[in-house]
Amino acid sequence: MTLVNLWAGALALALLLYVLLDGFDLGVGILFPFAPGERARRHMLSAISPVWDGNETWLVVAGATLFGAFPLVYATLLSALYLPVIVLLAGLILRGVAFEFRYKTVQFRWLWDGGFVVGSYAATLVQGAAVGALVQGLAVENGRYVGGAFAWLSPFALLCGAGLCIGYALIGACWLIGKTDNDARAFGYGVLPGLLGALLIFLLAAFVYAAAIDLPLLGRWIERPYLLVFPLLGIIAVGGLILGLRTRNDRLSFPMAALIFLAAYGTLAASFLPYMVPFSITIDEAAAPESSLRFLFWGAGLFVFPLTLAYTAAVYFIFRGKVVGEADYH
Image (cartoon, rainbow, N blue to C red; front, side):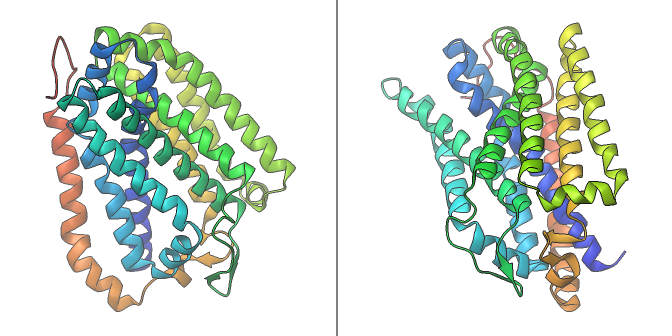
């Protein structure tokens, strides 16, 4: 394995961990306004409070890896998606502040609850829109972005943003099922069937829309039939999720939801290869000089990445189990 492939794999892993881990706590924020009451809201927040800020660390790791190992892609994506990135960061900051401040007030709790919800929706919507814009194609010529500030904004991108909101809400509901008891758990089971149905409708709509506008990405499925293994994996995961829903198996729902995201992520990643910005910049073209990659390896590769993985694993192990009774983060 070359250093380029090593860092491409590290970037892919960091992005996957961010989507899975921050995805469910953003999903809890998306579901927050529909909770049955204040007690359920407190249980929902207690279910994510030990891990939510650590989950966002993987976004920092992914951004730093992109900046250091693939500076051309970093520059291209930031030029094309500057506004979505600003909205993403503002949303994450707003929900973080609101998360803490809602416990400090009663009179204005509605304000901070609104901030938590708005931040969750905004951060998720622009993430999905950015992915949709990337799939649809960015205006890149000779390794430089030549489009406008709003070129990323399209009906397909907005559709992908809405779809990610549904997906994050689904994995958030599954997290509540596995992590809470009583009211919040019942709420998770109550919304899960509708979210699963909405997600399947979105996937069908996205495929039909992509075929209607003749996305170049679809042609790769004909060239690479093995890509069908990922949708097959997704179908198996949906079946497992339905089984967990019917049997009320609290431990099955979240792994199956994570497997659905893994299948979608694998489909996109395998469809892109060997491009990082389809179909303009390949992995090899985007990579920093070997001396830079080697320097990064002895710092971030041997220490930052493993330590972040160890920290994440330790936190999830320490705070394993359900939020029960009147347990409260604050």
